[in-house]
Amino acid sequence: ESTREQWAESLEIIARAWQDDPFEYDGRFWKIPPRSLVPMPLQKPHPPISVIATGKDTPVIAAKKGLGMISWDNYLGWDYAETQVSLYRETIGSAEPVAAFVHDYVGFYVATAFCAETREEAEDVARQLTFDYVKAAVELYRRMPENLPGYKYMREMTDELESHGEDMEYLKAHTPSVMVGTPEDFLGWLRRLEEFGVDEAVLRIDGFGHDHNMRSIRLLGEAVVPELERATASA
Image (cartoon, rainbow, N blue to C red; front, top):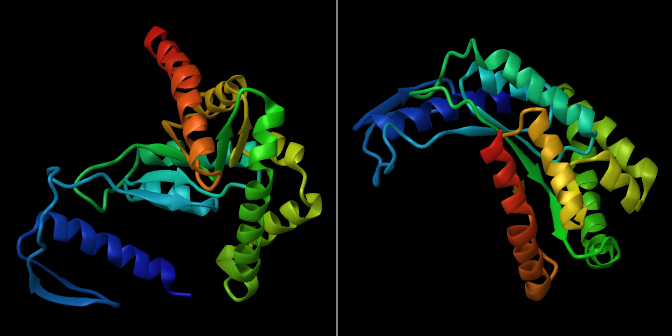
């Protein structure tokens, strides 16, 4: 019940420790006597801070504190992702930064990403790993709302996923957290994220085996990234 308050204190401590030498803190959860952090950050005044967000309240909280927001494990759909971004953008202008500066940034974490020359190959390679990841998310998020009212949206997420079983076509169409397809598919998905205000997508390409991982990364680097860069340069 107190995790959000602990999180808020942690942010204050991190931001202060990165700037003040020595620093100290006297809070509800932590009391830190004068101390020096070693080593201090290379960036001045400190690295940018972003917050992982799965619910609709976290983007607003992040924006009010002047922090970046990264949408994470979003299995409630494209519209839900767009709502998160809109809530953040509507609030960031009135930020009162907890850190030394406002970090106006929206990222999106793609939990399962795999690119191949054909959709058939991409799905054959990524199918089981995609379902395994989704099952792990369901198991975690099913337990969260039981005693914590703030996590009730996670029940909606698990119900949505369980109702469709192991349906790759549904996942690809419904959620931007699963991107399994061709370079053309990736261009469409990433451009859609860009259109509603995402600055950066983080693609998790992992677990498919070294050769498959490298082929996917190479294909994205050769066929997707240059197209996105050209579109940005001409905008």
